[in-house]
Image (cartoon, rainbow, N blue to C red; front, side, top):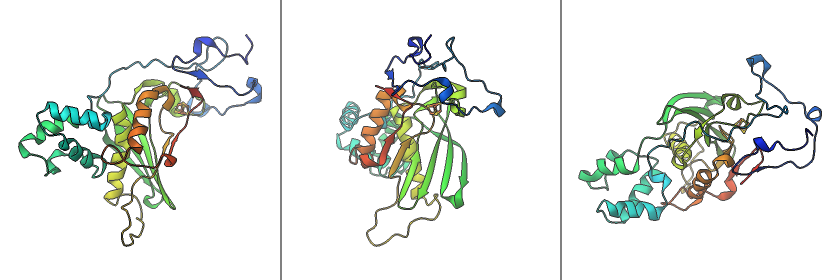
Length: 274
Ligand code: SF4
């Protein structure tokens, strides 16, 4: 088979591979982690094997961050509460970075537990935190509701705070230089699981956990993540709908979302076109 032709058996079901110009395998030598004893899985034609089907299709229970503001209001009305409670809950989560209903003292005390169960199913549990660069870089390891593990990395740079987020548990793209690619794909992350990485990072920053904080001048906005790169675990465009919902919520003004600038959000891809 012509090595420059795409292997249709390996083509994604959610998009197509993009190749700008034919290149032979010899013209693009790749670094392989031989020291780890890994051999990249390849098909009969010698091309890397791609995995698009998730072995696990489970998703966490629906969370406030999975919903638009209108959907949150509808869910609140179903509970027999006035619509404005949806904005209060959203403000606590997206602006105060908490899902702990015991701290939401503006909510009726006798309904807080019910609201917590309805809107704040557990998403990320911190397993490990590695701090480097005098505290300016933090790598988090999170356990998801089904035991799957993902990472995100928080970095302070002059003039910006960047968070590198994961979009899938594992990855099926089989890039030869990448440890995540060796493990294969476990499942897609939910919209709320993607967003909770940002909310948890903002909480750490608000608590003073990220290195030396900027000197706050009069009227200065509190620091928070203002730059997001989808360069953690996973191929974002293989989880297109949930990733795009997460991006919409990142840029949606408070209290619907985080009110970030779209210019500060980068979705990177190995070349999947939705
Ligand atoms: S797409 Fe990204 S996460 Fe997936 S294998 Fe390639 S480098 Fe690793």
